Image 1 (cartoon, rainbow, N blue to C red):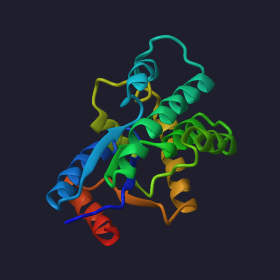
Image 2 (cartoon, rainbow, N blue to C red; image 1 turned 90 degrees about the vertical axis):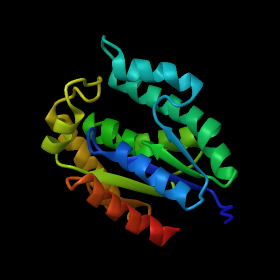
Image 3 (cartoon, rainbow, N blue to C red; image 1 turned 45 degrees about the horizontal axis):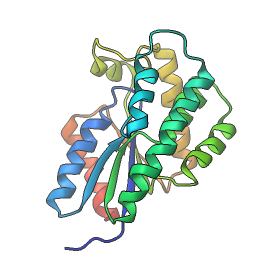
Length: 205
């Protein structure tokens, strides 16, 4: 079976929402259906990004909000050009763990930075490239925090008030871009969440 048209799908949600697990399940499901897929993530899946990820998630000292935002954008610019565009152009389905919406939700809503500016910067970083489809896995803060466990990175260590604002940001984005963004209730079991995910994917493909 030939599937020539590439597709760019991003997976979003607060830390601990279970998106990475769902991405892996979908990857396996699509491969079984003979789709060519590639799994990727932000930040840090390209060579330059590896160093940026270390700073973003594990730097012990102070990181200014603006520096944080630009580091994420620098990683994205490289990632889109080096990995996403190349694979989409080859007709593959690119499954990406986090993309443009993370910056709007975390830096825009979470850090309360100017969202119009972030949209413009995202546009510059990606040269206008957006996911064809985005899944937001919406879990309540308590459930998500429990799933993250004890070993938290710099972003996961932010308090529940921060994550509440990020979650609210994601839901606002879903309202704003209903054609692209689909919200899935991630408080359910892994199996039930995947059933909901498959339903949407099967309709689209």
